[in-house]
Image (cartoon, rainbow, N blue to C red; front, side, top):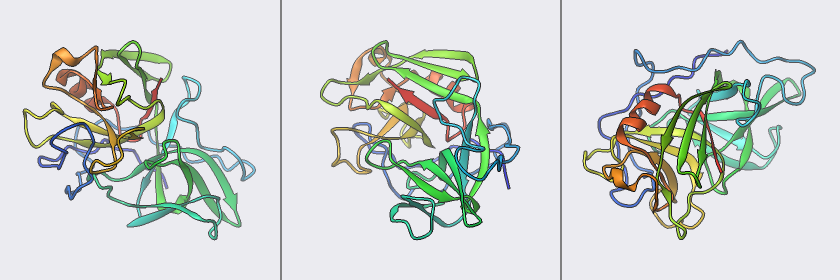
Length: 268
């Protein structure tokens, strides 16, 4: 069964680390879903069964510009991601339906496989090391699609938002320093938080990415990289952060009104 992937509503009180830029894994309450007016991904028309193997009904996050990304939303209390699409395969990780940042867990889905009557999807996973994937049973997920994608150019301090083949917006950003660089690779929007303090380093809003810092490992949450606002607009256009990506507050609000969780993010 498919459903629309809904951008999770921001809750009023969410725990975010008070310094640095690592999104805290804490006891944040679950975010609400189905908020009126919240952006939604297009409904999936259902996977193409084809011959039961390979990549049917799923598309990679950085595929051709006119390809949408299949996103799975966890519907069970807890799911297991495995190394192979079979019940006895080694476990890669387990994920609760509500992730540590208080959002319903979503995964961009890369490939599909059918084994002995069970359908599996290979999912991007928000764990170390960056780029880890695992196979999740299809019946543990509800499916939807997003045609949005985000491309971040660290050298040009630029974030571009695309809808299918169209670049719909472009924003200046601040990025990590040489000692604490922003990681490069393929990631996705994993959570959306509202800082509890208006004057925090996170500005108006903060997305938690599936990315982790390559150098910071001992912060609470393990060094999750954020995409967030800032109360220091002079930092935009510079390499000033601990690895997070900074945006002007009005820009992060625009992004949050537009894209759903599960949106792919390519950092280069």
